[in-house]
Length: 290
Image 1 (cartoon, rainbow, N blue to C red):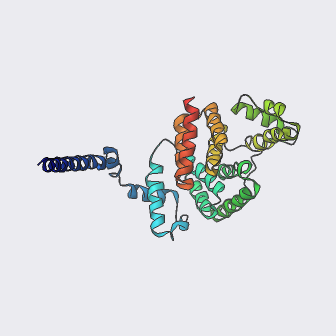
Image 2 (cartoon, rainbow, N blue to C red):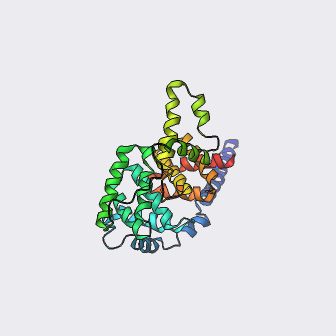
Image 3 (tube, rainbow, N blue to C red):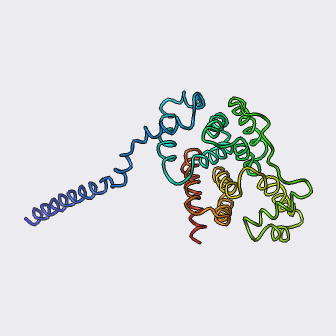
C-alpha cells in the first residue's frame, strides 16, 4: 500500500512538473513586442527605393546576378541600415567606400563610387576617402582601389586626374603632421619618440610625417570626417582593438559624439560582419564609459 501511494505521488509530481515546464517554455517562446514591431516596416519597398536613388541607370549592375543573396543584402543594407540613425547618404557612402577599400571588394567599390557621385559627393571627396585608407591597409591595396575608382570615374565622365588635395611640402610635412596629430591626441607623438628605444624612434617620425602629415592634412575632407573614416577602416580589419579604442577617443576629441560613432560602426556592419562590428562597439563602449 505504501508503495502504491509513493508511485501516485511521483506521478503527480511528474504531471505538475511537466505542466509547469510547458508553461515556462511557452512564456520563454513568446515573441517580445520589439521583435513584432520590427517586422511591420515594409523594408523591402524602402530598400528598393533607396537602391534606385543611389544607383542610377546601370550603376548597380554589379548586384544583378546575386539572386536571393543580393535581394537579402539590399533589404538589409538599404531597407534597414540606411533607414536608421542620423548619418546622411553622403556620410554613409564615404564610410562604405573606405570599408570596401579595406576589404578589397573592388567591383562593389566601383559601383559605390558611382553611387557616391549620385548622392552629391565630389570626385575629390571620393578620392580622399580611398586615399585615407593607405596608412592603415598599405599602398598596394590602396592603389588597387584607386585604379578601380578611376575606372568608375571614366565611366561617369569625370575628368581625370582629379585635382590634388595635398597641402604639405617635403619641408613642412612632419611639422604639420605632428601638429595635426596633437590636435586629435593632445599628448602628441613627442612622448612616443622620447620613450622609444633608438631602433624604434623612426615609427613616431613616420606617424607624424606620413600618416598625419601626408594624409590627414589633405583637403576635401575635414578632420572629423577623416577621423571617423579611420575608425571604420581599423574596425573593418579586425584584431586592432587597441587602435580602435584609440580612435574612438580621437573621434570624441575632434567632436564626433557617441551617436555618430555608433552609427558609423553600424554602417560598416553589412560589409565587415557581426563579429567585427560587435567587437568595435564593445571597444567604443569601453572608451565612452570611462
